[in-house]
Structure formats: structure tokens, C-alpha cells
Length: 205
Ligand code: TYD
Image (cartoon, rainbow, N blue to C red; front, side, top):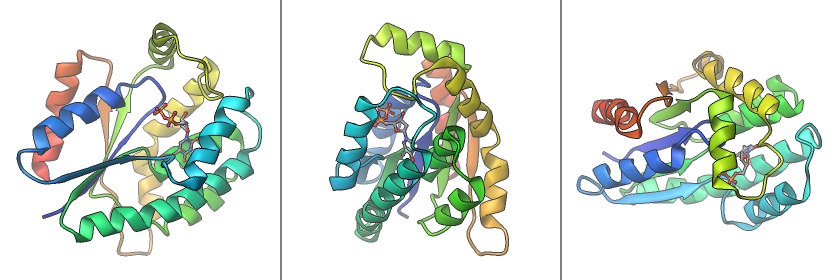
């Protein structure tokens, strides 16, 4: 059976490492299509450019929601095609990022949730949770140029929303057949330990 798996969390949470671990585990069992949002499609590229240009995280919330949604619409077609071809899809970020980031930027959560409902529902969403301070230290250690969302106070707000994601999942599912499967993973441990828990969740699929 093909599955659609999403990894989520604040910048610096360790998604990258855990996605590599998941690929390593799953590649012997299924064919994989690994992807990310913002995507590498036209709108995704525009988003990446804007993120580098702007410094204040609390600006242009609506513009960003619209751009991420447009990118997601295009990207969803690719994901669906891959699933239909029998591939398991791993996606780094999805509409949960819009729920967390664009809400923290100041956009309207009701509107964001309404738009999120229109997209394919993942079979499993893993939210890797770490304290904002730890994330900040990791981002600093990486030493790459700061993007607009990598500020500690903003990361703290994001973390709070991510911890509430199972609750948002229930709102998304309300009065419909869709079914969210959102698991919070404690990412504040050794990477091997974190992956042990992720592995258990993947096995359940
Ligand atoms: P990117 O730099 O590609 O991600 P990463 O830091 O995981 O390599 O992502 C750019 C930023 O986009 C990231 O800080 C989160 C943000 N983002 C949103 O604000 N809303 C969204 O819907 C998505 C998908 C990402």
C-alpha cells in the first residue's frame, strides 16, 4: 500500500536528519518519492526568493498564505500522481507549516484551515518538537544566512502552534470523511532515540 508521510516542525528541529533515516528504512520496502514545500516549482522558487529578501517575520502574512497555497495546489498534483503510480511519498513540510507559520505571521486561522481542507490528507504527519532555544542554537551553529522565520520569539510561537496540531487536525476533520493522523515526536533527544519512536509510527502504517 502506498502512503503519504509528512514531516513537520520548526526550523532546526531535526527534520532533515530524520527524513534521511526514514528514507533509509523505507527504501527496502517500497519505492519512494521524496519532496518538500515550498516546492521546486515556479511558485515555490518565488517563495524561496522572497524569504531571503525579507527580514521581519511579521509582515506579508496574507501574501505568503496565498503563495504557499498556490504552490501546494500545483505540488498536490505531483504528489497524487506519484501515489497513483504506487510510490510512497515523503514530504518535508505541508499545510501544517501554513497553519503554524502564517498564523504566527498574523493571518486568519479560520481562513487557513478552510484552505488546508482542500488538499490530500497525509496517512501520517510527524511533528518533531524541540524547544525554540535549542532550535535557535542549532540554526546558529549551521551558520547559514538567517531567513525571516529564524528568530527565537517567533520560533516559540510556532512551537506552541505545532504542539496544538492534533487539535487543529480535529477541526480539519470535523463534519467530513477525512482523517488526520498527527503524532508529536519529542525531538529533544539523541537522533537515534528520536528515530526509534518515528520507526514505531512508520511500522503502524
Ligand atoms: P525551507 O528553507 O525550504 O525549509 P527548511 O528550513 O526546512 O529547509 O523553508 C522555508 C521556510 O518556509 C521555512 O522557514 C518554513 C516556511 N514555510 C511557511 O512559512 N509556510 C508554509 O506553508 C511552508 C510550507 C513553509
